[in-house]
Image (tube, rainbow, N blue to C red; front, side, top):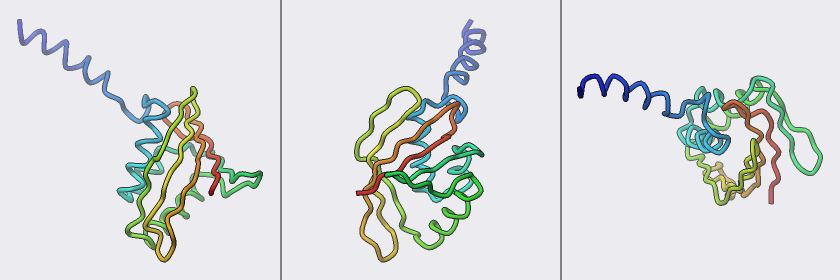
Length: 133
């Protein structure tokens, strides 16, 4: 009886465990920060859509696409071994996650406080809007 019950329970538990494809929008953003802090470039990039769009507010377009993100963050991780981000506050509305973040460990620079709006679909970040203090 126990054996047959475990055969049913284990697959059910595995299906319930979040994977990158079924993380909530907030879970995707949280995972992105964890991978950023680990300087895991490939894991970090896996959470972004190929057609990623990035904007700086007010009104300026920033570099777009996952390939450009790879260039930027490979250089940032290499130049800033102590780079670390933390979420200070978060609000979620459907597929949008609005987060106040603090980024420290930037070589020779003060910590940066920014508000980032993420649009997440299917476990991938499609768009980001950044507003810096």
